[in-house]
Image 1 (tube, rainbow, N blue to C red):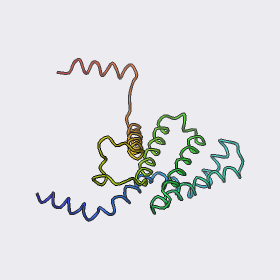
Image 2: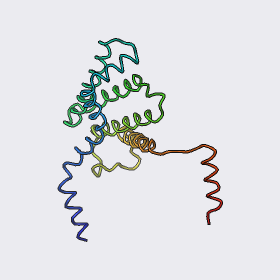
Image 3: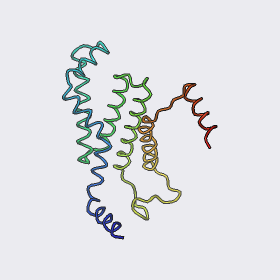
Image 4: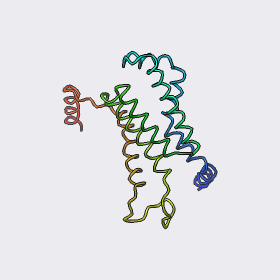
Length: 186
């Protein structure tokens, strides 16, 4: 009983900070990537210049766009100003990086990028205002709104982040070993 009271007290005290912490967690990848762009400016620019043979100026513009887009989007989301525009800008950064860094052909990185999109969908859904329902935050039966679909899509896409942590061994030896282990188990 004492633990329950302690938990409710902790939740009541921290309730006002949890939405900000959740937003920070959802954008942390963009924040880290933007800061890394700042500290690895030359390496990022040289990589883009060498990979795309686009020249010094265009490579610099690309890195600058990524830096400003990511850090600016993070600041707007954390300050709760123009959240929808910031989310759309970060969606654009995801698309741009998917092409520029050839992520489209690497399944693991593609799934991580889709998970980032899921986090942005959750932020976008949270920023949308809806009409009042009978109970705050609880959807009514039979009611479907774009916000609920965005939340569903965001949650499903976030699962992809954890799917990248799974390792599937599908070679003949490992499958045979699992079959023998299953058959000989008591």
